Length: 221
Image (cartoon, rainbow, N blue to C red):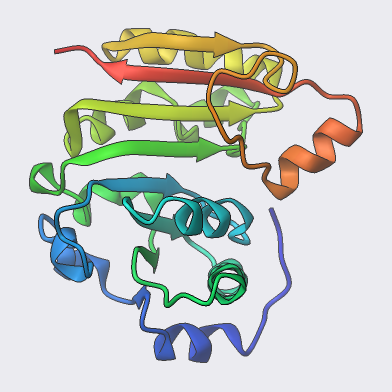
């Protein structure tokens, strides 16, 4: 998603208590950044404007969340979205961290000791051209990276509007050694998890009549 430059985003992020500017320094010790270090960590890859992570984190205070994106403007909007949701319930933000990083190089910031319990991938770029498909966040090459910091019983929750990406991802997950726990070709008619939080893209595509495809996969021991 393209977004206009927002000059306020970088200063606001740097001043925020729940933004981390040097994630490389936190590899294998992310849990130390959270108030409640007994809680498991869930990760959103490509958080965009933060509509999903803001509502998810405030709804599940027993979970610690990390949300990653590459664009300051997106993260600035996500930061504001998180603040807005927590303000509604009169709570401080204590279980979500935002950071800026290139997901293709994610092994520079996350390691085995981080033991991520769940990964969320929502409406990622489908990269339809064959030469670009290795850039997909669900491509086998990427999934092999995630396995290095996903806990032994860790899960991945995946949503997309793109039929080709979904079909291909079924193969990617199996090839990378994940077990498909649940799948649907119409998430809104056939929910496979509770409390589905719509992203901005999801709402837009649903209003256009596009069915939302979804998967839950788990690491095979």
